[in-house]
Structures are given as structure tokens and as C-alpha cells.
Length: 259
Image (cartoon, rainbow, N blue to C red; front, side, top):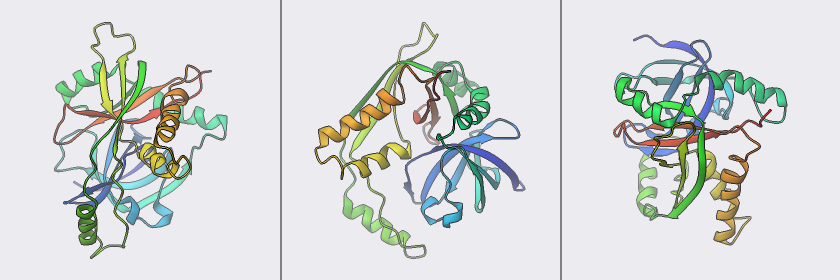
């Protein structure tokens, strides 16, 4: 299949993940501006990209991609990362940029996560956005990978690539529990959060908040009290795993202020 040029609003960047096939990659997703369809862009060796190609979330980017031959999920595309061009970034310093984001994102909203899971079984839908309710933010400590094993793995990766430190394995599992808005038979959901932003905040803020309880409180305040505030129109981006198609994760939060 020939490569096609796509223009995309990037809405999702997951935390970097070591991959034996693709080395270190970042799972990126967004919305095709022409078709208004979801796209998963993989593999993106984000930390190996040139600086002029390192895009932020809510950037409009152009790239060449083709339907991923080894991934049957309908939204998955294989990317020529060297073709990435950044055109514009919709930051939140201007009210008009929330409107620009909403104009692209809101037409893709599904009614509930329950409906996304139903579509997944019917047509393989693996990316989406929906409005949750009764949201709680929870976390627990988990056993990280052994540092020496990760360092050894990155030493192998660095042999033919730009040298880079091993990406840190954050020792916490962050999750949202919620139910589906307007779905009376929803049994509730408990999904892990894999957004790059939450793990990067943990790594950055721990130097400011030396006490771990304070650090976790600050993370909870941002991911629950701020993003999921009653003042915001809150939605969750979700996606599944290639190997385990029933396992969905929260890829990010879309929280424009209520008008």
C-alpha cells in the first residue's frame, strides 16, 4: 500500500515504551482533518526525532502513512517518521484555541465507553472519546522493572541510535474509575492511565514535593479536581492494546471549560 499524506490533530501521546521490534516508541493518536476519523500513529521514535519534528499534543502535523499491515485495528497506521512536519499548535492560552480543538474533537465523541466496547466486538473499534460520570482518581504502588535490566536494554538500543538514558519506569499505577453518562445498565469501569503527561509530572514534581504523599496529592488534584472539575466539560480518550483487544486504557483527558 502506498504512503498517503495526512494532516492530523494530535490528541494523544502515551508514555515511551521500550519495544524489541521498534526499539523505544511512543504511541500517538489523533484525528485526520480530512476524514475526521481517528488514527493511531506507530511507531514514533519520539526521543530520536529531530527537534523540529517533536510535536506537542494539540499540534497540527503532516506526515506520510499507510495502513499498518501487521495491525488489523482499523485506526492503526504505520508512519514515516522522517516525513513529520509541524504546522500549528492549539495551546490553551487563547479561548479561540479551545474552540478550534472542540470543532475537531467533539464530532468524534461516542455516547459511552460501553458503546465503544460494543463497537470493538463488532467492527474492531480501538480508539475513541466519551463523557464519563462519577469519576474517581485512584493509584497504587507497583513494583518497577529492575533498573539494571532497563539500562542493559537501552545500552543495546543506543548501539546504533542516538545515546539516551533509559526512560524511567514510574512505580505507580494511576487509574480512573467511573461509570458511563446516560447508560443505566453500566456496571462501572476501572481503567489505567498511560498518558505521557501524568508520568512526566510525577518525575518532574517529585523534586518540588519531596514528600511522596504530597506529590501524589498534587497529581490527584490535577487529574481529578482540575481536569474533571464541574466547571469543565470532561471527556476521556481511550484506546486498546494490540495483543489484548478487550483491554482499554485512558490515553488522555479532554476538558474544555463549560460555556
